[in-house]
Length: 446
Image (cartoon, rainbow, N blue to C red; front, side):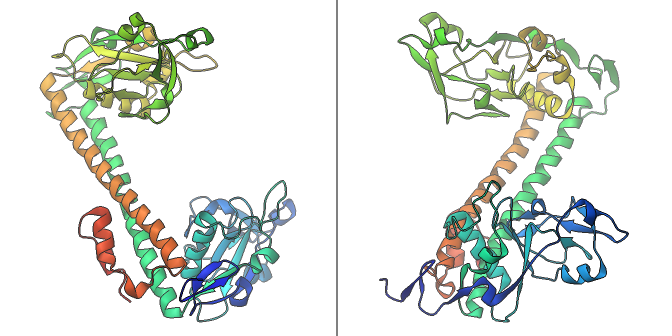
């Protein structure tokens, strides 16, 4: 046995931590049943479903309504710092109520868990539930195993939970909440830049930067100086090799890309399939730097650029390879950004796809799309602006990933007492993770 630790029915924990059942510390109340009969009545009130619960927080964007009598309003009312735990759906998922909406109640697939003692911190218990269900699987198998798994009130009541000293509970909750808020901040920054990028692209690809008079074209208004051309005039388009049983046979097995490997702006090499390519086919389906890959099927029109030094990787027939005819006429990355705008924000490419059971964008239809081509120097400016925004998005995504890893590590170590809050050098931890000064350095303070 580890020194300073004791064995409990949920694992080894510090000697000075107490333990008990959830119903030792909380009052549990299941919500109101949703039925046709309960829909009838004049006192319609919003209520929460399992779909309104995320780990740690409640969303109120989409609420259903149900009749609640005055007695039921009293019975099912929510108070600040009540925990809400999913009885069905994602069993055990836990959120905390922060008075997001007055007069909001909850249905019977949710348990309301309200503390009845002052020396238990609901936020600490929220993080314990997240650790227990997502990472440690402490309560695995304790839900009723039926066609639809559920967590009954009686089973939830008997769950054992730790109760460190209140001061330590609060410090643990404070540290984890601070990291969580930092992650949420990165999310907001990412979404803000993404929305900014959409607005900037709309202007750059339709209006330009010089307040130039516009002309009407096959694809709408564009600056007068821009030339509208067909894509096939700018690129040689080569569809990939067909995947078939006969093409699987042969000694020259080579990896190839599918639509599942092609994402906006990048290629995922994690899972590559293989088939036989003859020497002539290797030449025909080779990829060169600045080639574009456009999805013929799947997410029709999704485009990536080949910016890799990898050799001996080819592509299948649900992908088009676009190779520019003249370097001075088009910048591939400019074209990729334009495709992302018209595919994701307009119906132009979708309307050009064949309307069959499985929508697709044939070589002839892709080549026949009209493209508004500005001068090359303008293309360079646009690419520079959009690449700068992409770099900012990537920067914040990396920060979010680092913080998420830090949260997971701290959640594990703090919840089992492996790391005690008084011994945390939080600033060093964060600096190591994201390599810059962070407001999280204050998180270990009481």
